Length: 303
Image (cartoon, rainbow, N blue to C red; front, side, top):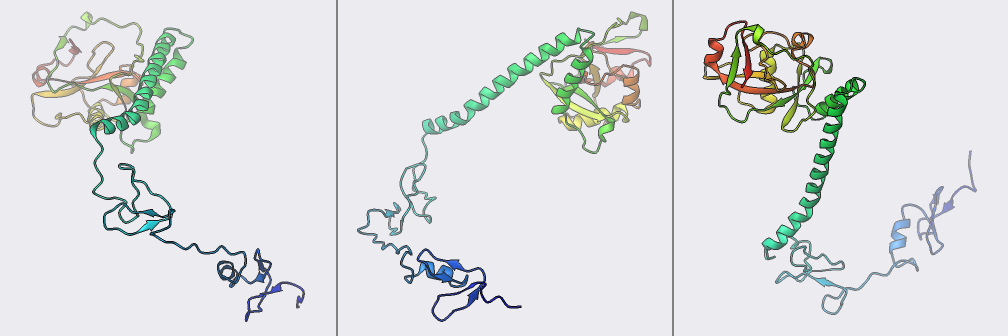
């Protein structure tokens, strides 16, 4: 089936091809897609832009390269950010440009550092207000659950740990890192009757100086300590012969979590409420001799 009235013939001399989607130039001529672009850029079209004659010596609109011995010019000005002179693309990164003086460099650094300091100050003030509100809410029985969730969310936002731990097994704590490898002074209580019982255990919402860490609830206490050390870049020599060993302490009362039994699971400690998710814990070095002479039923507290 033919369509004799569909499309138009290309008006390019020697072509006369029928194009079903013809293109029309501003001058009124109809051309096929093969000859349209050539026609619009050639002298055949009356409305085509005329090429500009460039004279590097007489034309004031040509920007000459400032590099010594270079005769290149550009239609667009490209100023150097240091010396504010025009250079061609080849000499754009020229070594002859004078270095920025210390005062200018300090001003540029300050230009970028000022907003960062402002953000840090605002963020610190905001975190302090959140901490204060959580602390007040923890004292109210009606708001304690909500406050605990918010506190735990803050730890989760920046928590680190092995990505291989399933999300359903993760438990989160705020860890205080040791300042040095010196063994911390501790207090040993052999008689359980001398222990001061804490009637109510509350979370510490102040996360300043701590690192959010997650471990698996199915891990043993020893493996959890090893993982915390890996996540927080803490030197761990628990598996080596040495004078100090790492142990986990509650910041609330300085209580050492199972100083001798490292095979107890984290989940069991949480069921016994020895550990509470979201609690702030301290990991500290203690003398190996203390652990060697420690009675099985004795308890250790930070002095």
